[in-house]
Image 1 (cartoon, rainbow, N blue to C red):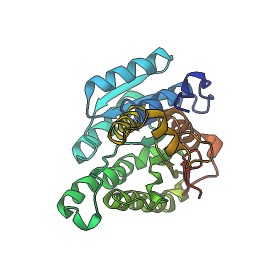
Image 2 (cartoon, rainbow, N blue to C red):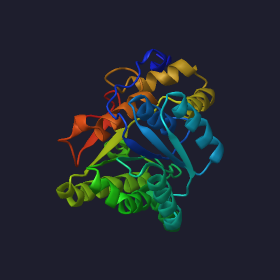
Image 3 (cartoon, helix red, strand yellow):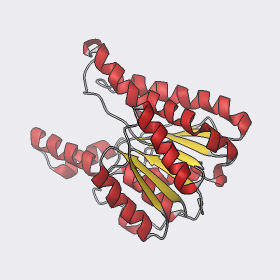
Image 4 (cartoon, helix red, strand yellow):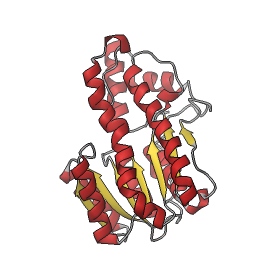
Length: 271
């Protein structure tokens, strides 16, 4: 089954009415879905990414839903850029109620034994340390508003596929960071959780399946079906499905949930 289920998906439930949600890593797939589904859920959205044009496109989608949008070009690996992002959000909205961070880089698929350690340091800056830095900058407003943090992780935590050593290291460290932040912020009423997607059925995965099909001399559908056969639902999750898990964890409906990691993989992993 290669048809998306997104076209028939209902609007997000109003779980974030008048909340201010800061979404980082705005892109054409999951980052966009996180912002748009938050807006559908009633939130005003602060959008952060490096590409101004992409931010402007998603900001237009948010405002078309009747919510306010603030687009801030940001390099979240840079402390000064993070500080400016948070300050602009506070100046515009007076507070931030939730952070949803999906910014990441996926290292090349190679053996960890062969990976340049200096390159790992750069990937870790974005995949782990930027998240911690953002929460540090936001902690005052999150505590004041009994806020929430949702960090986007990956099912690479659960599987044993070769070639993902550096990425698996970063995502394991990100999970540990989320758990530690939950321990530290929990007494102040702030919840910190993670969402771990598997394959995300969007353009990037589609293109990779097209390349695999061409290289293997099989059809695109055969590649999809082979991968989907490893899931309980026999399909891959869409960006909206993953975003909805983040919206739930950011909302008061998840008020008793912190320090957890929710897998959204259509049953590709069990945890």
